[in-house]
Image 1: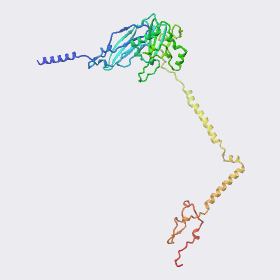
Image 2: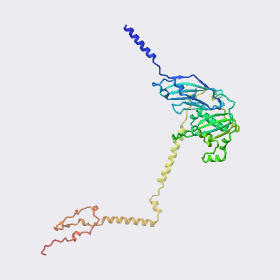
Image 3: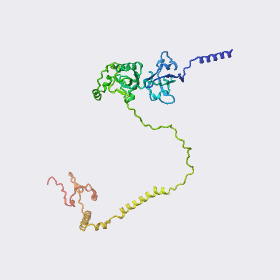
Amino acid sequence: NGNLVCHITLHLILLSFLSAPVVTILSKSHADRNVYPSAGVLFVHVLEREYFKGEFPPYPKAGDSSNDPITFNTNLKGYPDRPGWLRYIQRTSHSDGVLYGSPTAEHVGKPTIIEITAYNKRTFETARHNLVINIMSTEEFPLPYQAEFFIKNINVEEMLASEVLGDFLGAVKNVWQPERLNAINITSALDRGGRVPLPINDLKEGVYVMVGADVQFSSCLREVETPQNQLRCSQEMEPVISCDKKFRAQFHIDWCKISLVDITKVVPVHSNRPDLGTGVLPDIGEYNPPSESLKSRDYFADFLITLAVPSAVALVLFIILGYSLCCRREGVEKRNMQTPDIQLVHHSSIQKSTKELRSMSKNREISWPLSTLPVFHPVSGEVVPPIHPDNYETTSMPLMQTQTNLQSQIQIPQQQSSGK
């Protein structure tokens, strides 16, 4: 019975583990999604966050799964980046991503596989699927008349919304009145060298929108080419456009940056591009490395050039310098021979006088200073011995001196009695 109870307990524990939900998802792949854009027409594909949320585990709190921050990474399959015509934007991790661009006729018939990887920043899990872009050709491509507008009050992700883009195309069609009108391309102003606006007053980056039509440009669009408006644009003033009020309610267009192109009058430029080839080097046979046995080389010539020649030049310079300093000296005799006799006599007399004065100064008698003479006390009249002894050194002699032997000439008076 004890063994039976243990088996039943272990079985219940295993069932509890197996029945628990698995919440760890390393990566899941969706089925391929196919889209069919047309060449020369704007292609927009929205990467919806709701589409990927079902692949991630639920949030512990019910109703909070929509707050998961999800970002996307897009690249051409087998390559680290997207094709040149395809762009991607996602403003924040809580907004949808958008793939957009305008394929050209060169990509017609070539399926483009884009790998889309979604990252859940809360659980650090990924989900992946492929987007197959099959570019189709159209008879209307390219439309002959193309106009590019710069809208200042809208960002690129706002313009990519279908309702906003539809409103803009409706306003352009109302002004242009074409039979066929298509959006060709949309470009952010930042991709054209624009600056990121300051986060004040709800400023926008701006967006360039290119549209194409099958009829000539309307007179309203041609007004920007008049000399008056060109002058106002050169002075950084807004031009006067009669149809601007049809856009002003929703779109603020910079008419100085509008571009009108008639591709039927554009002269094609044929550039002579070099043949790039296959990229494979031609077969020139096997590589023959140098032999292992190297020939002996004589370095005696290198030794002469490197050491002997500079040493010889240095030795010659040393000999020239020694001859100039030692062998070219004039000497005293040659100097005296080139000096006039009268100048030598004057110089000799000056030397003799100097020597005589010096010998006389050594034998002269030194006067004794007053501070060395005996003095008497002013009250008692006693003779006070001198401050210094008689055999003091002459180097410490005061500046003020008196004549010699003043001690024998000066009589010190004696004090007399009051009766006398």
